[in-house]
Length: 284
Ligand code: SAM
Image 1 (cartoon, helix red, strand yellow):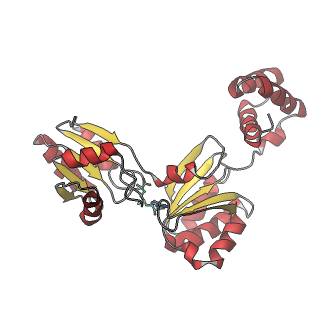
Image 2: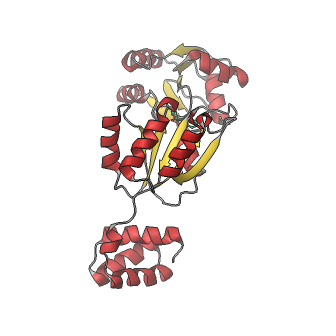
Image 3: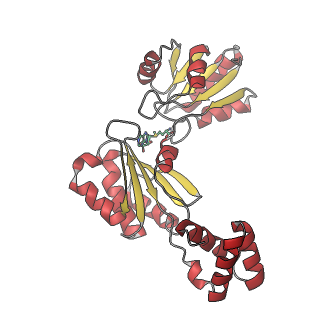
């Protein structure tokens, strides 16, 4: 049942037009107004699914005026759906300011989940580390990009980036110089589309592969960088590593880490990172 005076934040496909939920289509067909980043792109999607909607254009470069337009519609008792060109609104896409203003004014915001390129890529990567950091787009200028990469270099979790085709090579080259040539990455290109490609290798290998085939530099990219090696684990004593391995064989991870820290008085965070690594490697 559709709610009046509500803003629906609706995820749309990232390539394959069938990747849209039944609920999303129902909402788009029944709201009073669909506010879209580009009406022409969205019209194509809606027509494909037989949805007739009143589309209005929201200005991606002037979110405040978009917020005002949407607020006046909500104040007049209308229901509004917010969509972007692809994927989930507000994720490296416009919408957050609109959502913030709408919530501030006391109207309901209802998310309609669906496609997202980062999660789609992660789900097909086979990366086993349980934690990830979604970064989105790195700075366009190499100096700033390298600065950001230097900050991220020692993170243990998987790092997820979005990248445009004209910058993919420079981006991978900068990653190689900051993270080192042996760091493993996965490149997910043109997900859900005709030339979908998912490739894993070291930064050195992926760089060479991209340079060898300019077709692989075309389209849309998600880059997943595996987390930093566990350096603290080398600082743990032999006894602590042995105790942790024994306890991990018998107990859940958190409990094994807690007990090892109590028994050996070693750094709990380092033990936790080592435990994750051991689980990932299937050594316990
Ligand atoms: N809101 C979208 C989402 O939920 O994923 C992201 C929009 S952002 C403006 C566009 C970027 O997302 C692209 O430059 C690319 O990095 C990534 N992306 C979007 N669709 C993709 C696809 N089909 N394959 C790979 N990456 C994609």
